[in-house]
Image 1: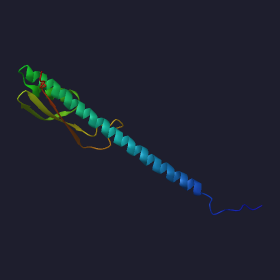
Image 2 (image 1 turned 180 degrees about the horizontal axis):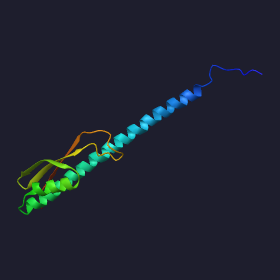
Image 3 (image 1 turned 45 degrees about the vertical axis):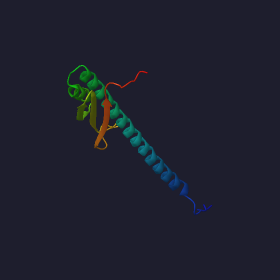
Image 4 (image 1 turned 90 degrees about the vertical axis):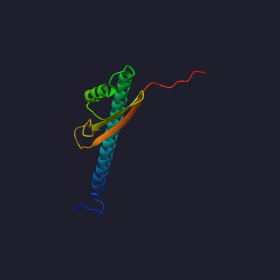
Amino acid sequence: MHRVISKNDGTATIFTIGLICISSFLLISIIFSVNFLILKKRVKIVAEQAALAGAEVVYDGGNGCQIAEIIAKKNNSNLAECVIKDEDIIVSVKSLKNEFIFGNFSSGIIFAKAKAGPSELSCP
């Protein structure tokens, strides 16, 4: 007996391989995007912590930029800029982008800025 070979033999295999490649690419893209968003949020939180700590020290009459730098360094970031204006402190923090959760895949710098100081509440 002879086996009849149709023109469609093997198409399902090629289609499946293509589908797996596209799915893998999409999954990896989503992982990198989520990873970047997590790191961006982490740097923003570090900036806010540094600004709040610095504002408290400024309110007590000390050097708020010095404590803001310590807070940033303890959170694996660097203080890029620190400005004290009146009773407010404006802090800019930078962090290397190669701190991915899943390893070091790329490099770059992520910046975040935060401002803190006494609130201006008006009582009627």
